[in-house]
Image 1 (cartoon, one colour):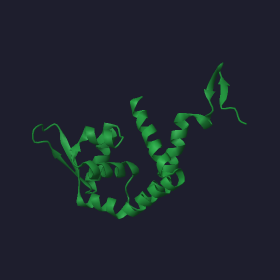
Image 2: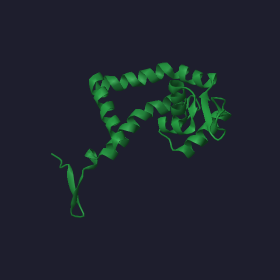
Image 3: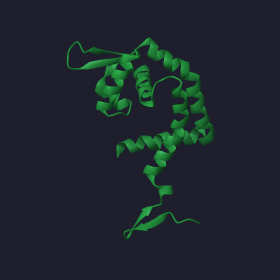
Image 4: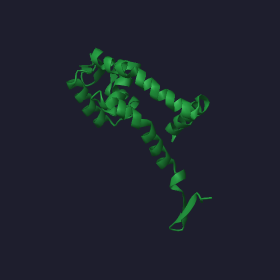
Length: 150
């Protein structure tokens, strides 16, 4: 049996096999590989996909809300939205009450990308559920949600 703790500088750290950060990165890469493959044919990145998904799900919103929901830093989100604007996949309008604020919305072309990839995205999600099981997947999602409290 492999020991899960290795001494480093007089202190024991969890083995990299049992390290939360490394385990999350490994899991992310396993989940994202088929999504990246799906997106390769669309000409959009995974970050652009997240923005489109958030806009489709929550509707038009300000940049801060969009960045938060898409798990992006605001400067990155601003750059990505600019690219999506140039591709005609989103629109950006100044807020009527506060001209400093801008609202981003998905266009029909952006919705078409989601619609065109819906079956593949659902298939990817189903494969994950098949491997983990529905109950364990829900438990995992609940645990990951708890990480937001850190």
